[in-house]
Image 1 (cartoon, helix red, strand yellow):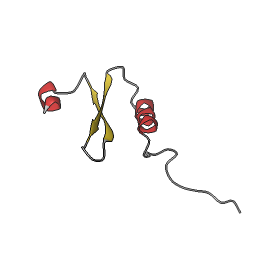
Image 2 (tube, helix red, strand yellow):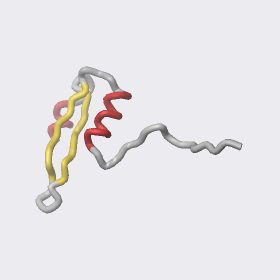
Image 3 (tube, helix red, strand yellow):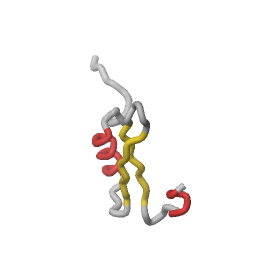
Image 4 (tube, one colour):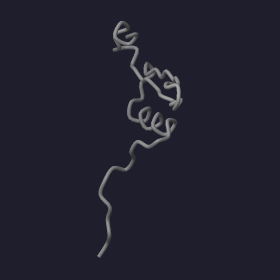
Amino acid sequence: METTTQGPQSGFSESLPTNLGLIRQRYPSTTLTVESMTIGTTSQTKVMILHDTQYVDPVVLKE
């Protein structure tokens, strides 16, 4: 009898560089743009906004 584990081979984590790598692996477009910023006054949480410059509406992105 052999034990198997079912589930995803990879998944998002708390690490932004790891998550960005996973996204870039599945979405290998040169038009994918990443904007990094820190939000929050107390938590100082690092966030990334990803968008494809080919498809994004600049007005909506600015909002």
